Image 1 (cartoon, one colour):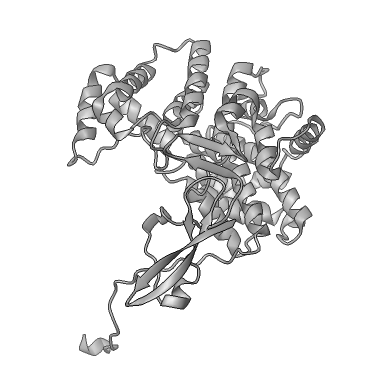
Image 2 (cartoon, rainbow, N blue to C red):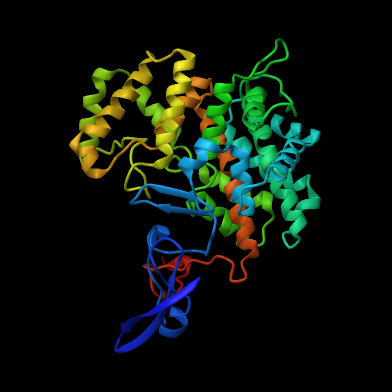
Length: 430
């Protein structure tokens, strides 16, 4: 971190110098860590949209350009040439692996995909109609009760073991949650399958007949996982970092991230998008919903368009659109009513002045929900798949936070607007 210059804040006739740090990419950052001690004031930033909470070298987003980099590599290039576990290695260790390193890493992940057999009993404590995310939050948090040899956050080796375990076991736990919800027996992982193919097998295989993983579907799912692997300091990642700042064990931190991701404004956006497309139902009803979206007095929101950070086209959406075309072509469901609505919505968003002026382009959630639905996943599984994909990002950020010598326990301040001092009144006199 390079301290480039200083900014001067004048308050009540006094001046205070604030260091200005220059990042390798992105806007300069004012360092206000000593502001309260020196000037006796806080800053006010709801949602922390103008506040850097940490120093990180993992992921960079340029929302104006529509750019996403992992360790300096563009997501477009990674999606074209790489695959999910290679990107996992990149996020965790900072460099693309050699062939030997990648083979070793994939082997370690593959050999950790099974979960402790007693963990099966946890699922029986949930109702069959429980949302898989509820199950995921509970079971991932409970991993700390089984893997005591990887709870010491001060031991680098234990942090490494915990990281591999979670990357390996989250697909297994998510698939078990799915199988439990549909009343089918659990399917154990197979070491002969790749990461995405193994997850498809655990979700859709049944003991009564053979299941052959379709390579096109496996590739599309691998790409979905890759595009969701990390996305800088979003709500769930910040939650993992905040939980980790207290010294909580890694399984508890990831469970906290999963809970945050569950929100419809975050990880549940692709589910909400598909449900919106189904609510629209047919192409002829699109103008009605477009009119509602343009009406400032109507609370209706178009899901799957625009992004909090990207003020241009979501770079992940370009890649996801290609996968959607491949999957839908393979499955021969181009004439599906929901898909027809989606295609027309996409056309309108790219041409209509309202969408173009506000830069409401289709985002990654718009396409990923369509793909997952075509694969046979119910909407309730969309967010769990997001969670298992994002796990590597959470872990990478958590490990970086633990190693940061400047890291302190998170303690945001507030702008208090409540009552001033009041005297207690006995209940007889109220």
